[in-house]
Length: 292
Image 1 (cartoon, rainbow, N blue to C red):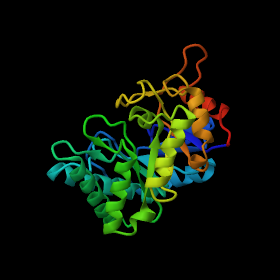
Image 2: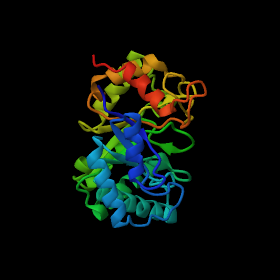
Image 3: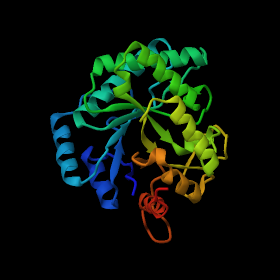
Image 4: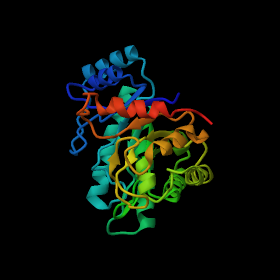
């Protein structure tokens, strides 16, 4: 069975996300280590770090990760670029203190420059962040995007070029940076991951263009919008355009055999029986989990 979990709230303390994940029967968890809508990233207090480690050790969970702030844009210029790198460094240091496996970040949008300049800027930001963090536990995970506006990362080629440029500057990028694949984003970007042939073509691109074992995490989300819409709208598993059979194929693909998956679907409860949507989505994924 694959390792499955979800992004969970840290209301009341980071360790509360662990308790919530365990209560639903998850195998792993994703969190924010700081407010994702604010630039300020205060240091984690020693007691916060201690509570996290105590709870996690007792939980039975594995592969904990965090998602970086949505404000970060490594493809930006001037002040926004500087704030983005500083914010990324601070949050990556949080993840090191918590000994998380990964920190997921959206590559960024090039806005007023160009695709090539944006890709080069992202690579520079990654290299600087590594030099300032000197990671020992946590990989930075570049997330593929749906491709809205000038957002980079909606093509596997974008992720490949970012990693190549960064690695030329710092060979340690190979051990400190990976990729997180979001199923909704891939579908919205035009990859037909809902059908076996399209999924194989997408995975062939990942294998051909990215360094070996780059894919370290998956965001398992269905899509409210159709194939190639370039619009990022998550839907509950099996209720969107990817569909339950699409997830059967995704979870069975050999490329993702050892890759943990994290739901990022809407929270809440079903009206008819009161079950939490996280539990419903988790069960839907487990019902179609097998390896081919």
